Length: 353
Image 1 (spheres, rainbow, N blue to C red):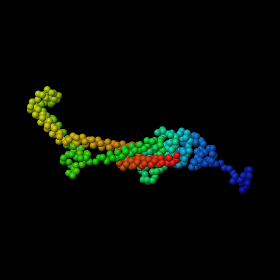
Image 2: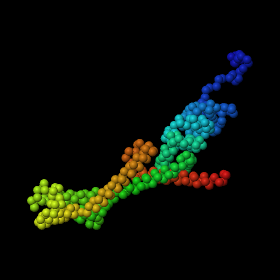
Image 3: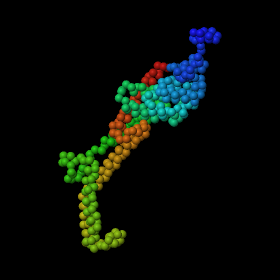
Image 4: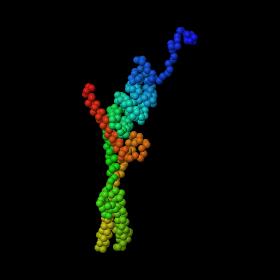
């Protein structure tokens, strides 16, 4: 009591002024109208509004603290010249990776990009955002939540009017790839004595190719044997079977027996080769084999492109058709959201005017 009464100047303990503790400027509200703007409890200090480096630091602090709504409000209030200067240093790829949690922040960012009319593709990263949204929509089982992506998708569509064409072309390519995966069915077998049942002559393509090749192997071996025996009956040596034997003068000097033997040899060779079957059958089978190879190449190409676009590093051996169809549905849903939002904007537009 004596100590309280002995305070200088007649001040008691309630009137003592203590120094204010240093606080985080995000939590500290300064109500001076010349130094701060206030929105959603997030203000912009005067030096943050004019200094791109300080503005970027605060934005990153909010992002690292997972204060995405506060970061979005801060981003929306930044002056244009400050935001335009800080844009190249904003880690857009990190914002995309943290979707859907950073959706509010990305909406604000792309809304400002539309406002600033930014055209630099390194900053926009439209396709990277687009395929991330497609991936999230393809994995989403809730049919009511996709509407949360409308605002971001409309901003992407304004920044890149080719967005619909990108989605449509990729969707068609994926559907063609899935359709090609199913075109590896049975083919008709035209050989007699097929190993399959009498009720059906449809067999797998490798079986038909094997039958055709085995028949040709036997026929070709016999044909080679006949070719080697040519000229033995007439006593013609191998040296005479070259260019001299095929000369016009040699052909005109052949005797009756020689012409007759040549006819017999050629007819026998033709009969042997015809036993191998119609060459068109093997050719058509090879065409079918090439077509199937191209279908498989396209399916693998589409999946590789999707993995690069979305970054599916952990999916090494997926069920190809099921995963491709899932992304195709994601493309369809994304297109539907863009079209629905665009039509609603067109309807509201005349009323606002």
